Figure 1 (cartoon, rainbow, N blue to C red):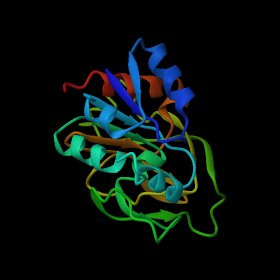
Figure 2 (cartoon, helix red, strand yellow; figure 1 turned 180 degrees about the horizontal axis):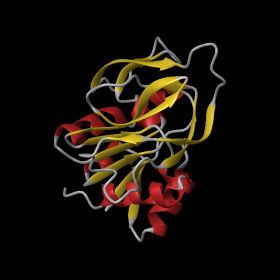
Figure 3 (cartoon, rainbow, N blue to C red; figure 1 turned 90 degrees about the horizontal axis):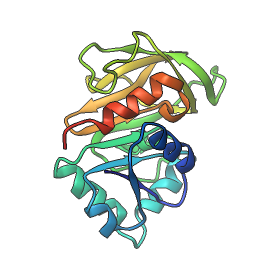
Figure 4 (cartoon, rainbow, N blue to C red; figure 1 turned 120 degrees about the vertical axis):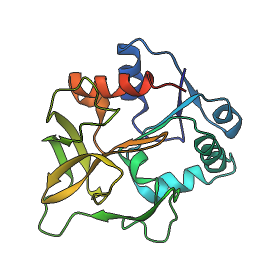
Length: 200
């Protein structure tokens, strides 16, 4: 069963609708104890990097429990801000520490870019990606963001908006997508389905 981490914000309803559409049962985790029982974790994210990290760092112990479960090998999928939270910091809130699973900073699009980057854009998907199995080559998916993760060897899909950036990443049991699969029609639902069907 999928556990959606509910930190008090984010696009919970649309994610719940996507899981319901593919027939996947789920539960919501509001505290560390609920998260520690999760066999797969999904972290939706909409809003501000600093606010999200402050919510995860509060007295409910979500940050520690989340990192504990990821270290134990539990499959994790971060959506949009949920992907950005995996890094050390973000230019959106430079004083706030991310989950720091990966080094580096989330960057703001350059001054000449129209932000937020909102709407459909095409992906360049690496053929070995587990998240994109069964997804047509070079799919279009839906984005809504003003900050981006630079490309790296963890990227399983890239997108270009003024510059190339990480649209999806995969590293062992950790997955993240900058786009919103729950708003990306059939291609997005297949990405969600692929995560749901990953072995625990």
